[in-house]
Image (cartoon, rainbow, N blue to C red; front, side):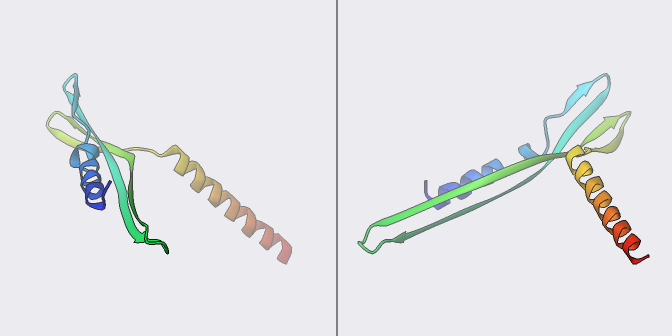
Length: 109
């Protein structure tokens, strides 16, 4: 795969259809899921000491749900997604920092 082909594939993978899900309607309420998409591509080429040539390219795409637009009675409301893993990690870091500060404070007395 040539680098230009990789770039085209990445552009197709990072389209608006990947960010906004198809609307789902139930009982007069419409929900549109939203994701954050990130990605990148790279490539290169060169030649060896014996004159052999080589090249390569690659890309990666990641998606993470961030929330949904909820449409009901003509009003739009943003409902963010709660990332439980991130929440647990932040609470853990705060707890460790509190323990470290508490231990340091106790050693000074």
